[in-house]
Image 1: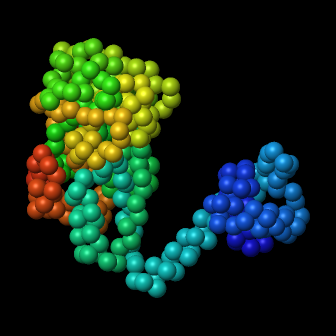
Image 2 (image 1 turned 60 degrees about the vertical axis):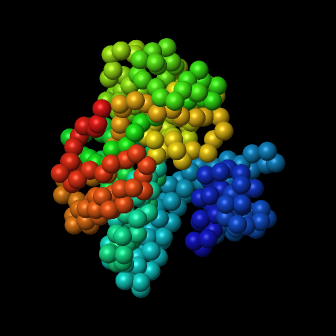
Length: 319
C-alpha cells in the first residue's frame, strides 16, 4: 500500500466520480482506476461498488476512509514539520480571513509581521460568517480579521479603524440612483433574511439596521443558508433584497447586477479578534503591528479613520 494510492482513494471517496477525482489528482481516469484496483488487491477488500452510472463506497470502504484521512493528515504534518525544521521555521500563526480582511492594510500588515518574524509560518484559514466566532472558539485560528459587533465572553475584539457603511442592493432597486440614504428611506425595503446568516442576533441586527426603531424590517425569506458574502451578493441580485456592508467591501465588488449607496451616519469597524485567554507573544505582536500599520497608512482606505490601541478589547461595535 502506497500513500499516493491512499490519497487517490480519499479523493475518490469524496467525489464518488472517477473523472472529477482524476482531475483533482492530475491523473488520467485509467491511471486512477489502476491505483484503486492495486490498493484493493493490497488490502484484499473491495472499496467501491461501481458501474457505468455510479460509484459507491462499500462497508469496507467506509471503514478504511475513517482510517485513511487521519493517516494522510499525519503524513502531511510530518512532511511539513521536516520542511520547517530544514528552513528554520519554529512556530505557526493561524490567521482567519473574513470578507475583505483589513482592506488595503491587509497585505502591509502581513508583510511587516513576516519581515519581523521570518521563523513563523503563517497559515491562512478562510472564515464564513459563523467562522468569525467558531474559528477562534474552536481553536481553528489564533487571530482573525472580523467585522464587529462580536459579543462573546471568551473573545476580545481589537478595532483597527472605523469606515462608512453602504446599502448593497440590486441595480433594479428603487434606491439604486440615490446619492445618499437615511434609515428612514428603507422602511419598506426587503432586507436579506438575517436568520440565514446563522450569526447571533446582535450581529445581524447591526447589519440589518434592526437596532433603529424608525424602520421596521421586512426580510425576504432565503431559500437556504447564506454562509458567506458571495451568497449574500447573489441573494441581493436575484431576490432584489438589500443589506448594509462596509464601504471597502462594496467598493471591491465587480458584479454587474448589484450596486451600493452610502448610508448616512452609520459607520462600522475593521477589526481583529483573539481569544480572551492568553494567546502568546506572537498574537499580541500581530495585533500591535496591525494597529501601527493602520495608523501609518491611514490614507490607504478611503473614508476610514484608524483607531488607537486604547480602543481595543471592545465587545461592542460602533452603531
